[in-house]
Length: 309
Image 1 (spheres, helix red, strand yellow):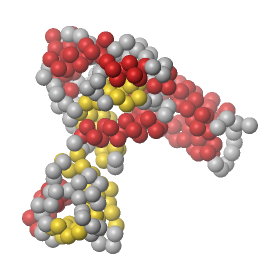
Image 2 (cartoon, rainbow, N blue to C red):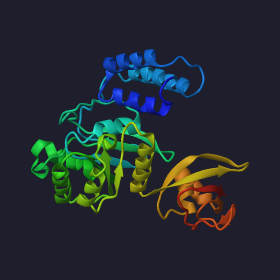
Image 3 (cartoon, rainbow, N blue to C red):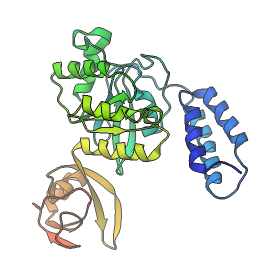
Image 4 (cartoon, helix red, strand yellow):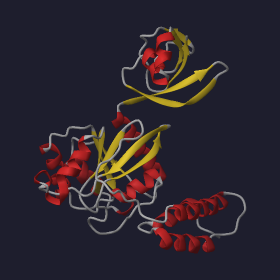
């Protein structure tokens, strides 16, 4: 009798931690050989997932590298993953974005910022791993000034800290970020939660009471989903769904908090904003479904809008 499929999936993800390229493909093939040959049900889904991973790994057979430390902004917002060396940033970026990057169980595996795009709440958001900052970064120790320059351009920060690890190094990182005058909205991802002692989360929350703490494990999809929702809150953006006559709703677009119907129309096309006379709205900002509002109506996150011209 095979073990429960959820447990099997967690074990598979654990076996893949730190593996890349041909090593990852060999491990995936070994996993495939060990799985029951069911054609339907959860184990069939697991087999499909493993096969998809083999195909994706072939495409991404080389580690992500950048020739320059500068990061070109992409997506609706840019969120930086920041923390001391070996805090689990690369593994977390891999899990959040499904892009294979160089991962190792030793400090300074990542030497340059690694940007990638992922879809959060239906919107493309750029995540950037900042290599391990250390004390003295503002004096350019470890190339810290350039790294802080990349961080300064971000919209928010996810501090990363292995839940069971000493957190003096994270204090050093935060001190360097503060000294650089960077004051972005931030949360704390308590990584490697599946390996941590029960009391570790409470200790971490007590050490950093000003940061919302989110325990996360790369083999726990629910914890990753909770972290993604928290990352979305850092962007300060609202999702607006464009609705067409006939109740067809598109993927959401992102607008700043406080945006109006006119702003929504402008985000579609600048000329559209000129001809916009209002909209019908479904969602949190409407008093009732399909409420007709004017150009100055302020939209809320999750609204569906049919722009009227």
